Length: 264
View 1 (tube, rainbow, N blue to C red):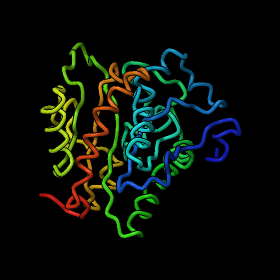
View 2 (tube, one colour):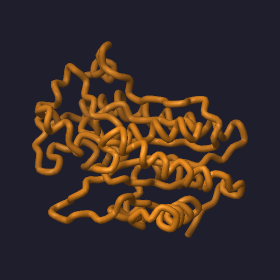
View 3 (tube, one colour):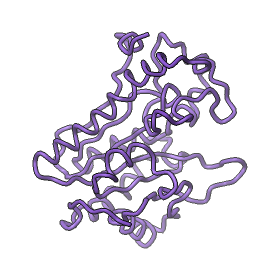
View 4 (cartoon, rainbow, N blue to C red):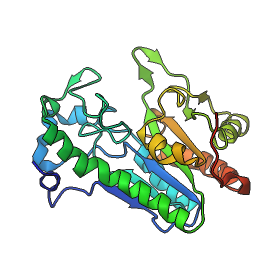
């Protein structure tokens, strides 16, 4: 099976570019923007209700990215397919890159895949997305710009019976240039319940996209996780846009931000 045979003529492309000519020195990314699965792959054997769940995509994250990209006049790159096919935020050698079970749900279409089938998925859905990110960062650098990078995800309100109290999580590994001001603005100016490296910790697992494209290059960056029940409607996205856009405008207005730096 080849990569070209996986995506049909009626299927979406492997990544989406929004506001590609945006003027802001910022790239916005979304690893889990879509729940799409190629028509020929029959939903990987899952019913529609399963494919609408968090196991397939980050609910609301894609719409949030598109809205922010336009408001901030920044380019954005979004994954084009469901993470159930292959997770664009995992190294390919990770057992979680293609899972046969997701949150207790068996995924028939992912069972017993051969090495050739896994490679075809990577070539079709994974590498085009990452190549697009690399190309956009290089385009900034060619113009003499050290870009900031914002990655947007969403998280479930409840996990294993625990009601997560945070409205938004700000994840960072060692670089606080964007995360620090963002947490202060959200908490002090908007009274938002902010998780500092919650519900996940960037120091423990920042994800492939940030590690591969951003951290090793010393680019200023932050990853945010927004609780899904707050952005699962258009009105919710608009409300958060009115909070996040001014916050990032303030952060991005600092000229000292745009330099390469590595932190111990």
